[in-house]
Length: 243
Image (tube, rainbow, N blue to C red; front, side):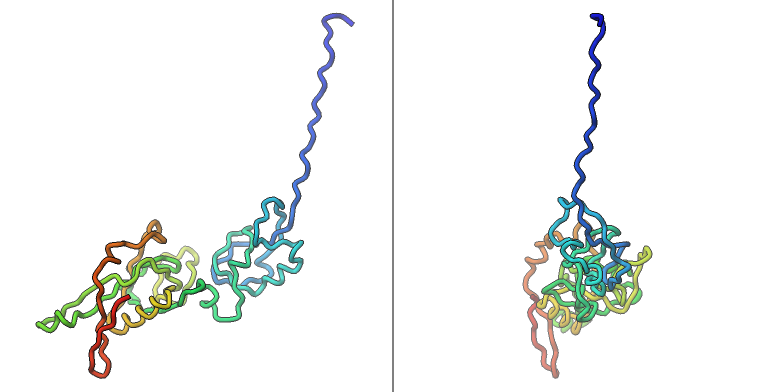
């Protein structure tokens, strides 16, 4: 062996990484809109890394009949294809559809809107948009001096629209929705206020930007002096304070 000869370099043997433990997770087989009643064909089991299985995922190991058990539930929010199914986003169809998708603690209240869109941002308000509720009414005190004095004020801010007419989900790229009513998600106190305001005036919806939805309300509106609605019952007028 000459001095120029070198020992062969040992060939590195690539060791494959250990297999990642997988678990079957129940996912949406296709895109599911809000309010859809699940069928078995809407769901499927999909292998999922066990380390990525979050709390609330439905696994085949824990729920072997999870696919059949979830059938018949109503989606409270939309699901993307392949998105894990979470029971928190579903509701059992024990009651009506609107009651199933309504967030806990809120009430669904329908208000009358102009079919031409005059009181609903030209008809461009869609389900799940956020709006301000504007009340227009006749100022009885100012009208005593003659004429007809009308006043507008923002009654509520950043209210979620549950439905417009009978439509609760935008479909097929719909951009304009028309209907006789808009159903809003309100607290019990807001529901009382809107119901009374609609009896003694006219309500309009002002569409909020997506950027503004969920932000703090305008403090200038909250600092307005307390106003009251005039309710006439059996010819006797009384003041109903605004909340």
